[in-house]
Image 1 (cartoon, rainbow, N blue to C red):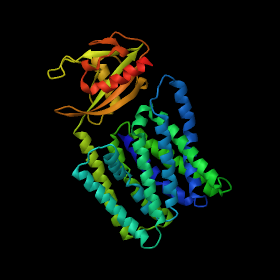
Image 2 (image 1 turned 90 degrees about the horizontal axis):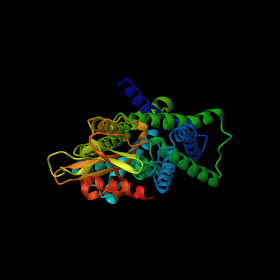
Image 3 (image 1 turned 60 degrees about the vertical axis):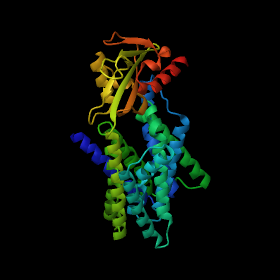
Length: 417
């Protein structure tokens, strides 16, 4: 627990320094600062990515390159807009407006993905947008609209980044396998923009150069890495709620280090934004809590998969299934699938052999479930209790519960390639 709290605190403080480094690097153009941040992060993660590819060559990826490139483009534009906004508005206003991205994601999910939103969710969205309107008005009345508009553009782009990467990140075969190509794509996009605009990347003072490196090392490499590590021990909704601390900590740091004291209007608007996003996060948590989360392990070896016959009273009794079961409270899907495979088959599986193949919500007549299907590649077909090895290409979806049929089609498709 002590290590977890330390990593959470480290992530919160490190990400809050992002706007401070931008201020300290004011000698450099905004787009150059954004390019340095992503390029530094990409260079730092390069040896780790290459080591992973060398040490785990068997890991496959189903992440679509087009989606990865879209996520990289959105991330590049997010930093371009957000860093530029700090030229025209305060740290408090900029970071608070960028924090509205979860509300934008909820709206986009409703409009484009047809995901339902409860009354509480809409209340949170409305509250956060009301706070954003106050922040906008506070800057507009002084005649400068560029800062808040650019910050909202940054929020919109990070929302696109989250939506585009939602499935691709899980299909990449690991966090680094997804994050590294995205970081490289973002660095390349920003580099092209900087080059096309003829902006300088050298010739700055030592203080500015150190601030440019700090923008990549502290908030990007340290802060985001700490959050991603904590994500393996806490639910994603908890991490997303903790992100609300960034505007508060960033504003305190700006007051301490830069002498920026937010006016009362910013405090009121910021409070509305924070309260609204908190409601959106809690609503999302409640929606997911109504679902039973299930981890499923698909053991694969030599073109065959391991299946069991379901022995449980009810409409699914007698159907075939893969090893798996309910994810316990505060248990990650990966930890759950390792536990379930061990309990049901007696097989100890290394986490490195597991790859999230599909995350799928499914509604039965009497309940909702969210299934995490993991592909577990083995070197041979061990003798396991409670089931048999079947050819993947010959699996009959009608012999499995309906929630398994999409992943079965994926297995048959990969077996025939």
